[in-house]
Length: 258
Length: 377
Image (cartoon, rainbow over all chains, first blue to last red; front, side, top):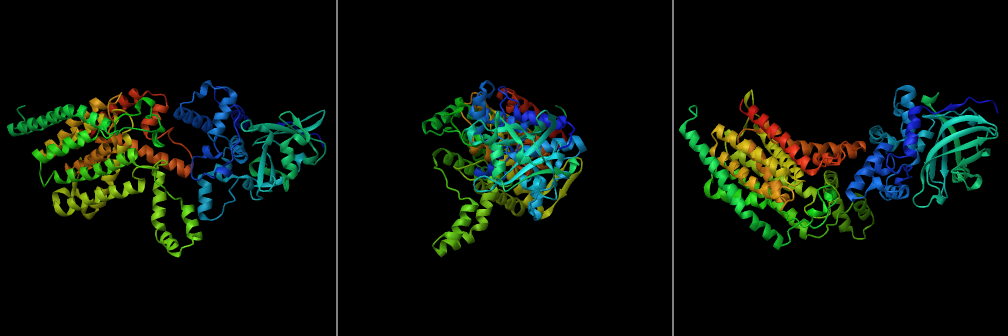
């Protein structure tokens, strides 16, 4: 291991992460996890299929609350989160990555992430739809695809890189993505900070969503590092568990982060 | 006064007389209509998907709907007995009747009808694949384009499960527009086939007038229907619109049409009196679709097609916000407005119902004035 340069994700991307961690509602709940895989809603608002920005989620929450006559601004954090979950408001991992990395790309290059990352959807209609609705069509597969990102060693990682888990879960059908938000070094070693949207089984019905964690590296292998998230280290850390059961875990760099 | 001929003053007095008489007649009949609607339970019973919106305040439950019958009946009766003219009033009344009937069926089915089953495309495809009877499969294959059309039209409405469905409404409105276009083009002669363009003069577009009439009738009927989402909103805006049409018809010498529009405006005054918050009754589709279609056809009749975007400004603005919102939702996955139509967006922005209605009235009135000014050139 060589000495690393402390590096954090840009202010704009950081503000997006913070907005998801503390939604702009009076109870300041974190944004729940929502995956459209079960609902399979199509052609709807992106905010209702787990792809909305923090602002869209808050606005939609206000609209739904007004229609349902729920006094959302006077609910406790737990109740607000419950309301968001039951209203199908939340963000999935790739939706979260899209918004954070889009902000980072804008800050770094002045361009949207769509200038650097294209959907894996093929065909005239598929690629047309992907251009119209990038947040919905840039999934983990797209971020992971060799045309959009290249694999790097974890020791070379910097803020704005991604960690992808391909083929995780019991049936090996889920993919997952973490966004690296910072690199620093302390007495324990090099610490990779990340943020993602995920639902751990221990989260129960309502406590899932956007969260941050870190991996303290002991060598150049990410799986040998100490994964720490939500006060949990080791095998109880479900993110680590997901990484272990994945068919492939890779650290990747998107074109704009070179 | 000296610039007007005595005959013109006399015709104006005649027109205003009809407006006053229809207002008084409607005012006297309204309490009875409210009683009848209540008696037969023709009232808003539940919160539909679309109107779980803001207009569905709990206090609005059980408010009688189909109050538009008041205006429709006044127009039809007055016209039939005092203003029946083959050249000018047959077509507007015919279109009004067709569109109102469609609206009435929708209103009644919404109140008394059961939930209507609609198969998704995926369900139909599955049935084609797995159904054990070949002729059922064949039926689904043959009718697949119709199924596609039905599903495609659902993007214009909310998750509607009762009443006349969107595709049926569009087809019936198309039929109403087609009948009026056919009548105008083939039966009423060349006078109805030219479009007057302010500051320019008459232009003839030949047979293209037919699709244009169909489009305008359908769009305007739906625009008024969409605007009828708050107490007093549509009624209050229709008064200056029909008043303006009456004035333009009088200026152009179409006395029969001036009377027809004046009767409509007069009746709407009484309707709106009972419809402002808290509404004693609501217009219902019977009124909004009928009056929307009548507005379009009367504007065509008094050669005011070109100024419709002004004299029906707020109706068109409301309809356009719905179109924009639909495109935003289904194409880009984003809300453009907090909610469509515009009056719900404004309410969600924090405007009270009263403020929204009155501001929209005022803006609309301003555009009607502008439209009249343009129409006089």
